[in-house]
Amino acid sequence: MLSKLVEEFNGLSPSRQALLVAAGVGTVAVGVVGAYQIKKRIENTPPKIWRRAGEINEIYVFPIKSCAPIRISRVNCSDLGPQRNMLRDRIFMVTNLEGKWVTARQKPKMVLIQPQFDDGFRQMTLSAPGMDDITIQIGRLFEQQSIKGVVWGETVPTVDCGDEVAKWLSTYLLEKPEGYRLMFYPLDKTSRKKSDEDTGALQDETSYMLFNTATVEDLNTRLDEKVSVLQFRPNFVVKGPPAYAEDDWRWVKIGSTVFKYVKPCLRCVFTNIDPQKGTSSVEGQPLKTLKSYRRKPEFGESPAFGIHLGLRIPGDVSLD
Image (tube, rainbow, N blue to C red; front, side):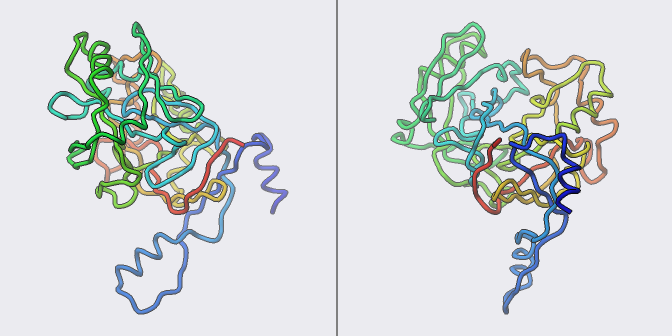
């Protein structure tokens, strides 16, 4: 069996962390408890039998909702999402003066705002075309009083990051000195209930999204203008499995860290934004093509592309 696995993945890097998957659910011994608790416990118990599906090829963290990611070689996985100290996924968001969050769906060039972190992952520096860099001391934000923010109809605690970065964002995105604010999520746990424990800080759906390189390669055979994996904004990029294999994964194990499939990633117009140019496709691609072959009746008009995961056993994920 081992030799078969070695042969099957001979083309993959021996130094990369393997990704294991399972289709079934675990089994547990239960006492006299309610049927709902039994069902939930069984559904959240990892299986004992795994098979190797590929390897982790890229890891991305998106500190600011709708802005550019940071590519990194190792992250710690918590309920809130992938993180390294204060580098955390979707822990900042841009809002208007009424507190409504702003995304690249409205302002595509948001994807060109590039965060960078210092070696200790304690301060964040932002850069954007035509703008001087600006640095935020994240630790100081915990000293501020939190106020109510809203993400997809859910109330979350947020901290205003101050007038200086607000002016910077407004100048870049609105070409005037005010109009937008940068807000920070100050908790270590999710305060949201839309997807139980799997909804993170300010993410649209869950704390983790996984994508398969072969899946985007298959899409590119159908497109005149090719797209990259970053067009789909994943946390984990997997190399090795055939296109769309992830549709059938119900459990994912990377090292000792275990994730459970929660739902498919349903795509919207954000998919049409070029991460290198900060512009949206006038032809409506690749969303138009995805709708032609990746829609499922139970999910309506939105095509499925990638999978959302929920953390079940915390740990580190790395490229080594």
